[in-house]
Amino acid sequence: MLLAAALLAALALITWQVVSHGALTAVDDRLGGGRPAPVPQFLSDLGGLPAAGTTAALCAAVAAWRARRQRWLPPAVAAAALAAAGAVVVPLKAWTARTGPDGLPLGDYPGYYPSGHAATAAVAYGCAALLLGAAARLAVRRLLAATAAVLNGAVGTGLVACGYHWPLDVVASWCLSGALLCAVAAALRRCS
Image (tube, rainbow, N blue to C red; front, side, top):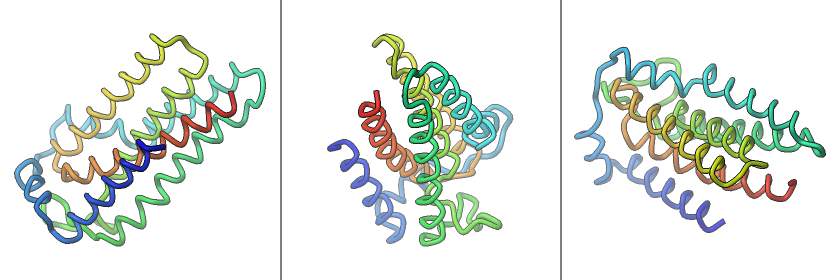
């Protein structure tokens, strides 16, 4: 739980920097502001609910099918984490009302900070790795964790490269999602 606390502290620090237009936002100014292109667009789309949510749902179904007892609990924990990410991201977007790299508000959405796509991807792919790795050997768990990390890095890179989000939007989502994944891992250990 120390890792979860550290991630939440980092989220609080980043949020403070965004709201107060602190020194970290200068980094965003230097690194953000790309333009949509086919490959970054594809990578950013991996963070949407259709791709990430479907992956998590399929992995949850496989995990439930493989489990001998408490079949419903691991997928329910993963679904709760995904819902919790949205329950935190949407109010933070409304509270910060951060404009995007193009200087405009996010259309019908209240703001850019934190990135909903990055949070969805991190929780969905992270939960998929945790669910599939629950009964697997260490090498398989490491491979699943590495795959989730690479996918999330690709999503974050795509979001920034297309100019859809500032880098801090993505990093903040990763901090939030990492804390949620710590809770999911703890819950899965208890029910195994």
